[in-house]
Length: 159
Image 1 (cartoon, helix red, strand yellow):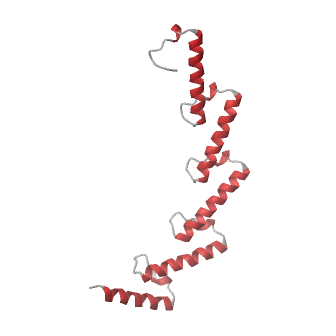
Image 2 (tube, rainbow, N blue to C red):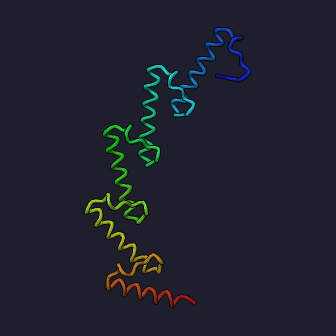
C-alpha cells in the first residue's frame, strides 16, 4: 500500500480508511492506464465496466495504428470493418510506392493494374536517373531510347 516502514496495526481506523481509499484510487488509475500493477479484483462493477471501455478504446487505437498489440478479437463488427479498410488502404499505398510491406495477394484486379502502372513508371524513372534498381527488361522501345539518351547526357556531364 505505502511505505515499507508503515505498520498498519498502529493506524487509527480513520487513517486506515484514508490509506485504503487512496490505494483503491491509485489502483483504479493504474487499471484505467492499462498498467501491469492494476488489480482488477479490487474494482467494483462500475469501475470494471469503465476499465473495459478504456481497454477497448486503447485496443481500437492500437489496431488503427497497425500495432502488433492489436487484438482483433476485441473489436466490434463496425470497428473491425474500419480496421480492415485501413489495413487494405495501407497495403494499397505500400504497393503503389513499391514498399516491401506490400502484399499483392490482397489487391483486386483494378488495384493490381494501378500498381503495375506505378511500378513501371518508377522503374522508368530509375532507369532515366541511372539508379541501380533499374530493370531494363521492363522498358518499352521508346523508353529504352530515352534511357540511352539520358545515359549519354550523364556521361557527357562527368568530368
